[in-house]
Image: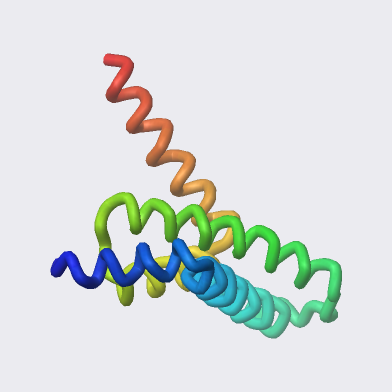
Amino acid sequence: MPDGTTSALRQLIEIGVGWIWFIVLAIWGGTANYISRIRKNNMKFSTVELIGEWTISGFAGVVTGLLCMEYGMGMNMTFAMVAIAGHAGGRAIFLLENLYAKRIDKKGD
């Protein structure tokens, strides 16, 4: 991965634009997940549930974006991973938590 890509992403993050994209993509993924779930299960639309989905998706997306930046992923891959994490929502947080726990366990050995 070229250094220019990483520095461009870091510059976007530093001025705040990258954070906005992280949140927008994550929430978009969460919205797609919620719409899919209500159609699949014939559920009634709930604004409160949608806001809850946005909260979880936004958190999962921002954490994923930070991890992608830490591992030096390119801008396109980072934004794709943020959107996927937003769609996965709570499942993404669970997976990240498991990865973190495994990493901590390895350091303790």
